[in-house]
Image (cartoon, rainbow, N blue to C red):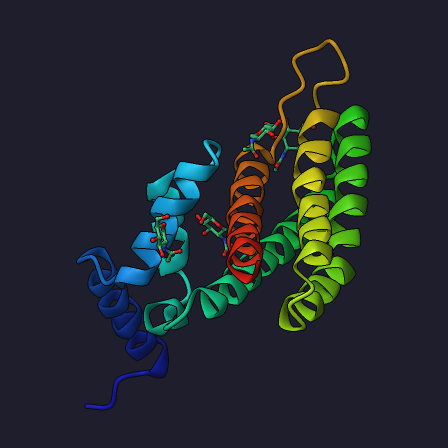
Length: 188
Ligand SMILES: *[C@@H]1O[C@H](CO)[C@@H](O)[C@H](O)[C@H]1NC(C)=O
Ligand SMILES: *[C@@H]1O[C@H](CO)[C@@H](O)[C@H](O)[C@H]1NC(C)=O
Ligand SMILES: *[C@@H]1O[C@H](CO)[C@@H](O)[C@H](O)[C@H]1NC(C)=O
Ligand SMILES: *[C@@H]1O[C@H](CO)[C@@H](O)[C@H](O)[C@H]1NC(C)=O
């Protein structure tokens, strides 16, 4: 019997997920996450290890340099998804509260601005211009706090629909930044 390709894909996905949950993490990732969480209290070791599991290349990374680039790419992928989610919220929800809509518009703008920023950050990273890369990654961290803080501006019970995503972006970019800073120290 021929399996439809979607169920084959499903089976493979399940297989990969179970391999991952068995602790399919390499030593470099563990050490790096340990160092990141030690130098930046905003980074949780568990979150860090989990986030690297979402990119299979991280399991084969052989250097901190390689892992740093993967980390930036994971962050970019995550932010791109968040941007799509905001677009979705704005387009699909016809009964959005005007204040929430305004906040979402602002979030869309700050997150859209990070797309070219990531391009530049990766270019800087590859050229080992770590100080410049640091500035760009810091602006991605700022985007996540700017978005989240927008919802707190009004003294009502406005609930941000993006809290988890903003927190994820905050930590993911903090991990990238932490690795970039380790590389600076190493190059001195
Ligand atoms: C983590 O920190 C220790 C101690 O500072 C260092 O020896 C090690 O090389 C670091 N590991 C990574 C992957 O940066
Ligand atoms: C941790 O996050 C806060 C903002 O929430 C920031 O002010 C602080 O500088 C961060 N700490 C480090 C070590 O980056
Ligand atoms: C974004 O990152 C978080 C934390 O690692 C993860 O739970 C989530 O699935 C990621 N989303 C995407 C689309 O990669
Ligand atoms: C639409 O937005 C309002 C708040 O502005 C929220 O209460 C409602 O649950 C949202 N509906 C959907 C389908 O997301």
